Amino acid sequence: MTYAYINPDTKQPTVVPSKHYKDILDQAVEVLVNDQVKKQFLNIMFKQMKTLKEEEPILFNETLLLMDWNKTPDS
Image 1 (tube, helix red, strand yellow):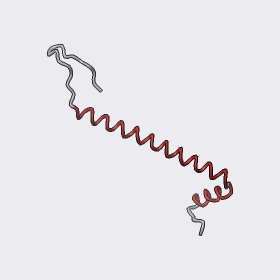
Image 2: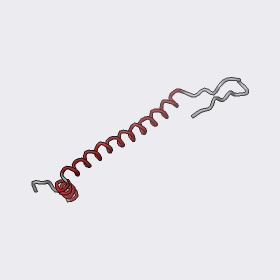
Image 3: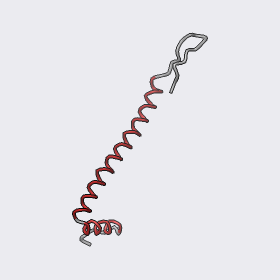
Image 4: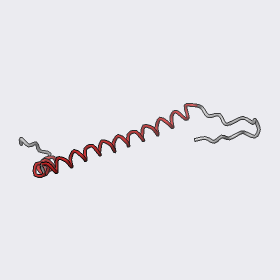
C-alpha cells in the first residue's frame, strides 16, 4: 500500500489518509470472508449429500433427477 518513505527534502515520512487504508482493507476482508464462507458452506453441503447418498442411494439419485427436470416428487 505505502512504504516507510522519508521525503529527503522535508525529512518527514509519507502521510497517507486513513480513508485510503480503510477502503482497501475493507474490500480485502469482505472478499476473503466471502470466499471462506462459500467454501465452508460447500463443505457442509457436500458432507450432507454424501451421507444421504450412502444411506439412500436410490432416493438420492431420484431426487437429483427431479431437480434436473425441475419437477417435484408430487408431480
